[in-house]
Image 1 (cartoon, rainbow, N blue to C red):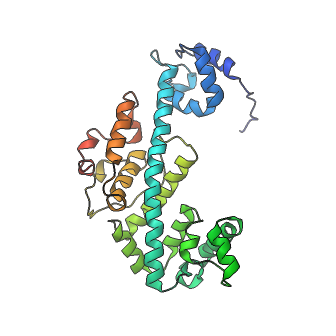
Image 2: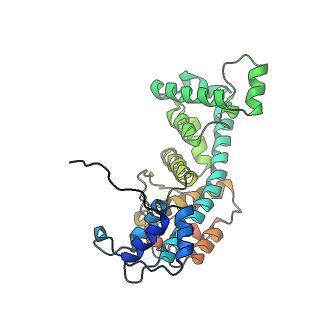
Image 3: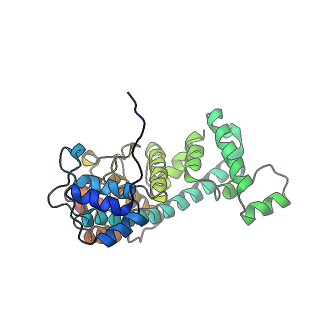
Length: 301
């Protein structure tokens, strides 16, 4: 039976007393009030929750639990999102470029993104086209304005459209395209099979959105699942020991794709440096297996 939500707003100063009454150690109340004011208790509560005793419904903190522990997890998570977002950007740009080049030339049609005959599912295509039209209508990009003023075509060419649509829309176009030969060429360019690449671009689109919206990654279970990479051309991991729903597996996807996109990247170094900066953060909650750094994937810097 559902009930009405009856909780009221609790101000930061009052939250200090509540947290301390539940056993959380707070050494500098003024600083904590500032954090609660500028970050918000609800966002920080995701990092406070692991510090609760079992059963967590009692809302009592472990004997050694401190506010600084939760703050460290929050800071780590924020830096992890920034790190991953920056690397995903490189991969996303490369995917857009590959689709523009290989599909436009392969179909010999620069307007393929807006041509229904190239796609399997007309319902999905129609919805995608409607979203493309919205993006074209609202954008203020000079190259789109120039195209509208000079040409009579109803839509700009694919390489222009790809610059103004989100990654999720690009995934819909990719996975709905009929020409599997061209899709396989794109997947092969990134060192994967088509089923793997199709699942990976959806995974990265989802991860990019989580990072872009400042959503917690540490200890999050993410439902989008990958196909197994059975014949990797670059060093890979033992997939049988990996939890595909955790962020570690997504970090491995990023590292693998960077072999193509940015062969001289410093991603491994940056990741290890971040983990070393926050040694108290439980990386097992992200799916990192014991001895993860010994996996072939991480042996090539």
